Image (cartoon, rainbow, N blue to C red; front, side, top):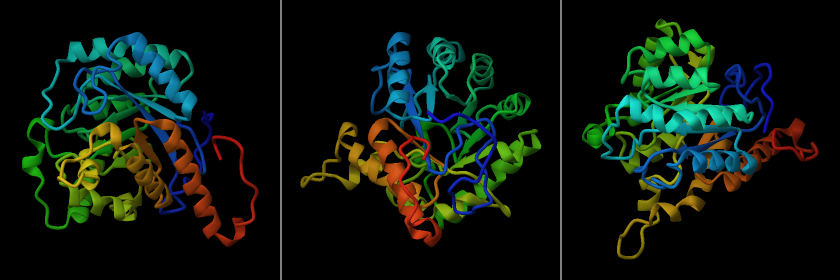
Length: 314
């Protein structure tokens, strides 16, 4: 894993963009491994529900090349119902604590201020909020007080009925405008703009065509309100990939059969300048982002002949 250090230029659409302070720094796109401490997540619900299993899984993801391990205790799959705050805390508490104590860079995937507060106190170093600060108005203030990086995603409501809001004229323009409004809101709450990461919310109130349009125009998503932000992409195993890979009868491919397609998306996103990809199967995606980094280097004449790096951070 990469050792955190001073912010440096990340290989994104604008060379002036910097990696959020306090997170791993690399010339390549980072990899965030998913630890779902839930019974109902769409691809691996229940597999890591027990704390010991979740901790072991997080450690394995790090060994496979994850730069960040993202721990969540509430499913946001389509149609998911919310769990209460105490249950979410019960699920993630020991997992965040043990993984942070083991030296991993831990992110907490939550929409609740109290859960983020606990996780940050237990050693988490990033808050990943799929609601972009809309589900709990206190959450941006918690992040601001802690001075940690904050992922804000494009979101139009809770999972139980989000597809009813998947109506766009120009999805890239509208997602960009709505994300820019959320950036303004969280910075007004005290979050340092240099700590903000944006996420276009692949699959959240988006139909398949919306997802592909957003992935193909990441440079536009990164530039909001005259500023450029690091971009996190969470496309791993999502249903738009299953539909793309449907069989001859039109049956979408199951989640466990979407990993190769996820690797392809990670490669393309990294080559397009994504700061980080959030994935379930880390090892192949860690290889993919390194290939993408080398591809980008080869396109720059001054670096085309540079020797390969043997390290994960290269």
